[in-house]
Image (cartoon, rainbow, N blue to C red; front, side, top):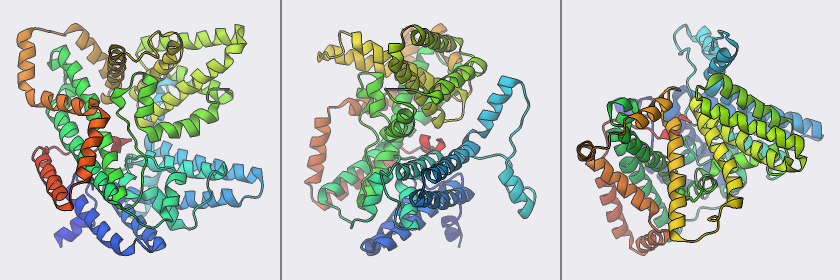
Length: 553
């Protein structure tokens, strides 16, 4: 009875995630039932919707009700857009759908952040009240539900999928699904539900109506992805995080400055291995069930520029922002009132909230330069609009990752870097060079910049990033005995970091040959290899529970 209770109850300390044995027991059950139902498409959609909602309950508890409400609301709003007979009615339906999703996301993710920011800017003392818990406690009794607003796992992901669905119907890029269970399956499909990749309706819904197929190549590829994802998460991400990065990030002042640099290099590997490991597993699991999810990463640390990096990193989110924010703002061609208002809001926020004045000067100087050019050289307006739209998109992208000042700064820095690169590439003598040394140098510079900005991504308190930078600058302590001691103390961590970057920068042709070799093996040998790899990986698993980093987004 205790085991049954454990299976059907929510434990916030042990959510159902890919690295837990309970998840694989759950997946085996799903595949067993799926093998009997896959030919009945509607029944298959109903079953996978139910188990996906159960999966979300096991990761988020009571917030599964939020997901269910979102499903019904967006399904009917999408149908309303399609059935509307006038443009005004369609606009009202679309506006209602977008407002519902954005207000839902804003309430659960940004209520405290926006309130605190408003209080700082206008010296007010407003407080956030969780009206949902007040209402619920009125029925169930005081203290039944916590009063603090808790961020539901994956809310940013399924909210963005819902927005893209209704917008694509409005644009007539897709037609509404045939029934509610097709829509619920599209949104809740459990491999990608809580941390992506973000799935587009036009890419996924047609697959719901196709029969199940799985070739030997697809099966082998799925096993490779799942094993690779577990390796990335357990070995490359969790091990170096628990045994090195977390210790340095919690108290950088206790270590020489160069150790913080090593920790941030390690963190770049950790967050890539953690997030791409999740999406590798998600894509592999989906493939085993006959569904294709688009790749989310393309060796991002091989990027030769900031623009190239953002084409390779979190591709599903980047394409979402391009199609549903950047282009609607005007893209490369134009800009409207929304562009100017958003740019002004960003500047006001940086001016009143952040304490990093150098960034304020850069942003303010950029805005001043744009105003002068716009006034005296109006034929450059398109360039100004492109830059402002790009900057807004990156700032919103930063805010999407987390409700804090640090994420806004992180997004702003990347936006400014993209703007700088757009002009630099026009005059750079190395832009089209194929020389190995030039490529190496461009990759090195890009990687260092991305790693530097991640200081704001990793540290939570707004004062911590500049404190770490000052500590690095003032306490490098590059003495041989100290350097030797650090490398001896964390030798296993540094070997794993070296291995991780070697595998990442390995030529793709080598990886393809390894995959082809694995595909040609018989099933028995494949099984033995996978079992040995998984067994060895789990010997290194840490006692400290480490959820996937992007669960918080």
